[in-house]
Image 1 (tube, rainbow, N blue to C red):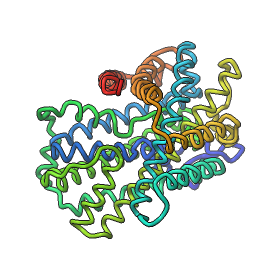
Image 2: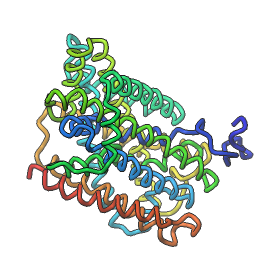
Image 3: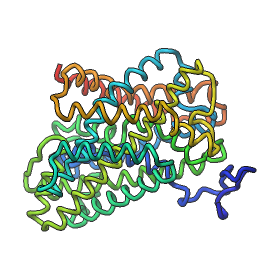
Image 4: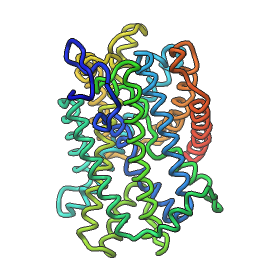
Length: 434
């Protein structure tokens, strides 16, 4: 690849000559997938309630995500094994947990992702189809795109959506004329009354979902294999979460300047972004509001296709390991082009795409079953503590080559992340409509 990588005998990238921003890709994919409309609303509401006071929490949150994603990528590159292989080595309980989680979570998330992508389209085209119709359309478009698109096309599409998100959110943040002095003051760790849970949510919530576990699979799909790619992976990861940090800061600015000072409250959930579009239309005109809704759609749809692809890879590896009884193999773990592309063509991968798309459409027309909502909330709350804890276990054991095991800083960051996610887990479970 023109002075950046060496190639093996088959022409596949074997080892980078140097880390280069031109190789960045999987990190952008995982960061964009993790930052959905719900995360943007949470950040916006934090800004509207507390101004710039919680900006420090958003910065710490980015550092936490960098450490988690780096640990996932390091496991894949250092061991040549997938993350699910690592989980399997910790005991059968991990297989049982993941199996139940990925089925229940996928069923409910599919409806959530389609609804979130449909909201801005319904607002952009008020005389067009209804919300449910747009939701079905976005689900089908996502299904067809991921079903037939190979990773390079998928990555390029995600990069375009990230570009739209970035330009729109930063433009609006500049347009509302931030108070730079207040922005800098917000970097000092302060907890206003009643802000603890919002602070923890900013640290642990934005950009943190099951798709963080998919990062290693996207690293392999990119063709990166072996410790020689470690420097590139780390650069990729840092650039991605720096971008995420800018999103979060920009949304806090919008919330602080546009809503906090005017004491404007938004509706809960993703619909809050539609409300913000109306506020922008009143203040800055319909063109700015339309641009924001386009960015809202880019954020939502990037999460949809990212989950369809990334969690599909996880599920394909899950099924493959069960069939092989845990034996090692190339399902997502090989760095060559054939091994990297094979999971996307498997029956398991495509079956999970269908599961994410068609059964959840029932939830678009029916009230969500109470028990299913509770199960989804419990399983979802436990996933990030599960990820942080198992990474600590795997990367401090003989399963990882000594030179790539955790150092003191990595252990401290993963332990802090694990503790944070446990606290958030308890809070989320308590908040469920039992």
